[in-house]
Length: 314
Image 1 (spheres, one colour):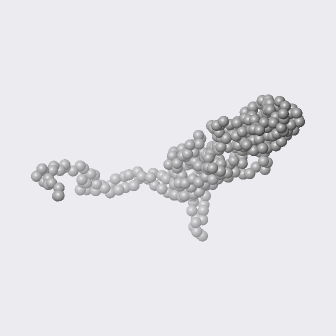
Image 2 (cartoon, rainbow, N blue to C red; image 1 turned 45 degrees about the vertical axis):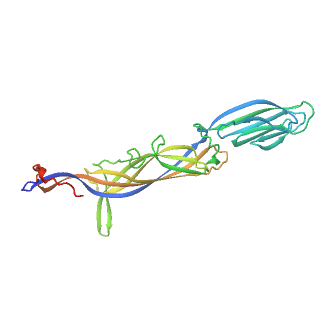
Image 3 (cartoon, rainbow, N blue to C red; image 1 turned 90 degrees about the vertical axis):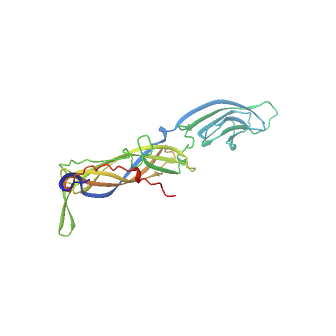
């Protein structure tokens, strides 16, 4: 319970001298080199297939392997003047003659077959060499084989490992003042005609990471990359020497756009990232205030008599 006589008490409390909400737009232009992501493997072997067979001969098939791309080359050496049909994924691609070759690149390889198309009553065969250069990606990223597979992007705040972060996380966006509290420069701003206000120039740094995911037409993630961002911005606040700047991130919006390459043979993706950050900045110091108050003391404990206990009404 409070005492009867009020007394003056001094309390140190934080004081907000100035407070603004501001937005900062950061633009990044990055290149993703697909050669750093893409892995290769080469298979090379000779083949001999009988002429006049009704069904084609399989040279290679996925047999349950995930979707994979590659470049194939078939050199037709000798076949007794018979034509050799090249069949990829069940579709005939070409008829080639002795001494010629067929080559092509496919983003989705399932099977490769050849067939001597001319009928023969002799035990004749077609001879040649088969090569295939596979293109695939680590971590079983078989849903991406070329730049054309990418149809959209997703962008969000993350750590350096690409794990999404919320705005409440301490590691999401770092914001700190670069200027010294004692050496902030003064600027004079005219609020209304004839009235000038002196403010201080505050330079602050914004840092963080964004993760960009590259998606195909089915929404699957082909691969993702993490990019650091940093920006120095300036605001004007009433922040005399001795004040501190509190910076809080209110909202972050990230967008990423793929820039088409000038050459179709380019092995890199150029992406533009636009990061919009909304910040709350306050200049704060500590002040001493006086309060009239009473000292409180504990009251006496009330003892409940058993005679006063009544059963609840039914």
